[in-house]
Length: 477
Image (tube, rainbow, N blue to C red; front, side):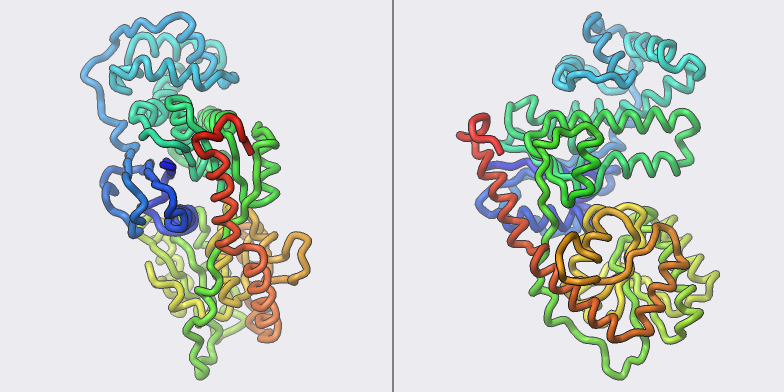
């Protein structure tokens, strides 16, 4: 079977969670061929892969959103949009429930013109004016028009790029990836599976609320639009995969049919983390580590402040932030400046490293994210017998404290952005070797028994096999 795996802002350019999951899934599914359709932000990433592409990947289709900003040659053309098509677009832009298959048909019908020519057409101008008058009468039309264009450009661009033909479409997130998965199902009448590691719309909502470039009332417009993309994916998906119970509940709240949702936790190969290089016996420092990308959603600044708090109480402590920092250089520079301002000479940014060479030397691991799904970094740390201090996001509480199992506590969970409580939790573990060892053993038992790679792969094999071409439409999950 040929499977089209659709990724957005991750594989194969960005290392970490979702990308590692895709690499693992493809590598362990050698009986299937894969086409990778990757949506990236900037064309300069083209061909810059951070993974060795498995042999069963027969094609990589790259779609870069910055290509959509090229300006048109023509302004104000008339496309002759039909009245029923016009009404459908208006309802969509006003946030009403519409049939995305009808929208796909309309947008594909006018794909003979460029995205910008479509949006600069007289037809779209008239549509925008009507939407503004009906729903946003107090918003200046000029501001609304240009904001609307910015919002819809990537949607039209992604649709115009199309999607390779395959036997099954599998999106690794909602958003534009979910839109492409829905498009594949519409064009080729093939099954569509959606896996959400985090809740895409909630993550975009947090980013939009904090953003500086989207102003005032338009934040709500953007948020509503991303929610409409999720509804598109939820409605068209034959199966929606969630990693844990709380995310399933949120998906249902957002409009996904509960009967479609299946929970498959992340998994790792724990025996890869058993014989790690240990800490030097002469090292009397406590080594605290974080396996993390240096980006705002991981809230590295809270992590840095927590280290400063811990350092005040426990002098012999080092901090290693292990992971790439070139994804957002401006944020990395801000973090470096904060480290300098707080005079934290024992805090080290290692950059991209072989994490297995460091994990055995750590005494405590930390994750300070403001949003997560089910982090592979925590699972790998647990397999290394390490206790964690984590923020209460995603499935972190379930991983650390369990969900009805009797394996015990594998660390300490603290509120998001509360560096004082995080710092105090680190100090508590620094001062209690027995507690660290106990929590590390609990962590290992939980990950080995509940979060194995074999379990993960077998679950996806079952789902893929259910959708083998002769069965689709007859033998559904």
